Length: 270
Image (cartoon, rainbow, N blue to C red; front, side, top):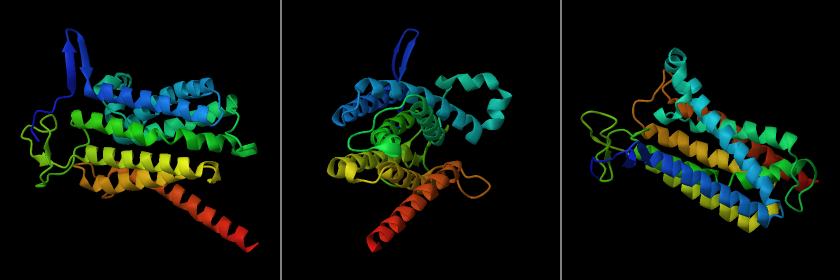
């Protein structure tokens, strides 16, 4: 590949369109369309989906920005507090976005009860809805990582592999590096496909929160592994901040599946 990567798609006078903004907008739009369609297929009101998506967009964006501020560069942002509001200067955290989405979702379902997809009843309502919402989330992650690629962000370590990429915005004398952003984008796309196929094949036969925890397990464990290929992000613990933040999600999902298997075992023996 060449070393001509640019974050700017188009400039028209004072108007500048960036690749990152384009891919982020496409990812959000497609995710909303998919969620609305899944709501319709499960006898849920599309307006409920739209209302929830608006909340999630705001909550996810706020969470992503606060995650960047608190997890990655707190010293800089606390010294320059006005920079916190300038999202166009870069800096969104996927872990912060995940937490923002989770918190926003629980607030929404607490004050805006939504009927569950038939035949789910009782306290599992919000869990079934969570499993619907999680399906397009890795697709959104795919588009975000492609935007990171054009921004020369989250670059990989130097490599001699034939698909290595030069990132001139990252360093003055660029060398070929792993396109770690594209690795994450590809993995997220595969996860999205798997979630969709499992949902279509098994649907409501799945235990509530199965897809949600499967996403946590697959996405954050793959994120942990790909972090080993990223450049200059290690902390004093020998791990990257992305790896440290991924561990709780992986442990949570592994524990959930273990408890599910134990519960199924007891049910079969009874």
